[in-house]
Amino acid sequence: MMWSNFFMHEEDRRRRAHGARKARMTPEHEGKIKLALLLTSVGATLAVLAVGTEFWVELNTYRDNGSAVCDAAHLGLWKMCTKRLWQADVPAGRDTCGPAELPGEANCTYFKFFTTGEDAHIFQRTTKKEVNMAAAVIAVLGMAVMALGCLCVIMVLSKGAEFLLRVAAICFGLSGLLLLVSLEVFRHSVQALLQRVSPEPPPSPALTYEYSWSLGCGVGAGLVLILGSGFFFLLTLPPWPWGSICPKWGHRAT
Image (tube, rainbow, N blue to C red; front, side, top):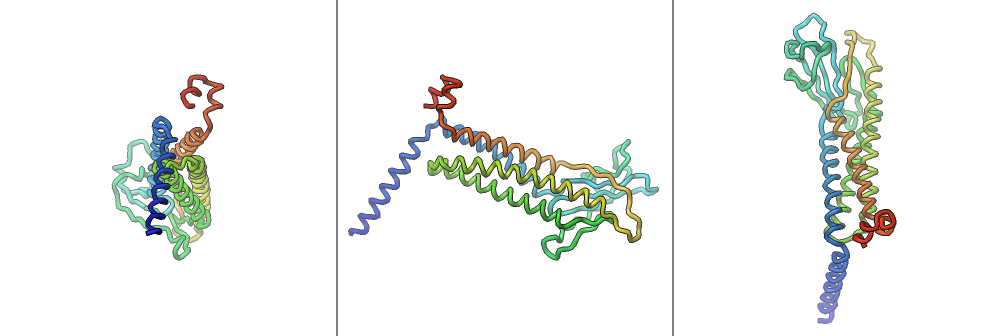
């Protein structure tokens, strides 16, 4: 009986503490947190779309090969696809094969950097696995930190733990920076791929490259996450600095 009363008392105390924390968060402040979370959720969606797709860069051969078909390829962090396209489907006025979204005979394979440690070969060129692996690992770290930031915001809204807003701001800012660093490392991996030409026959074809929509999603995700981090950081500031700049706003915040 004594232990049951003790546990009931503890449960009542926790409920009162939870209610007090929720009471300190005004509906206006909670609405601002939800708006900032909505912004960062857009960045999170773009980040997942970028990391999970393989349209980071397109490699295109030239069309003047004396054949009715031409070759193109596109790759991302985990996977590469080579495509054989009909030249009749390639837009008029384009000197190179592509774009890679055109229908054609595709052959997609996952990179073996993390399994057997083998380099990939594309159009008689060889990847530099260390750089590709670094780009993938940095991107995964960015996604993990982003998930931690989302968890912190959920704890703020559900438990009233407003001190986690600063942690969420740091997590979102760091994840955005990591995604941008991953994009830069991937750019170096593309340059290394183009330079590592195999001396063995057949001769390697001339290539051009262009960055595609997956990489654009990654850039947008990094910038949006950094912007969301700034919004969360502003929400952690006390109201008095804003009162000296804008008295009406500072009066409402207090």
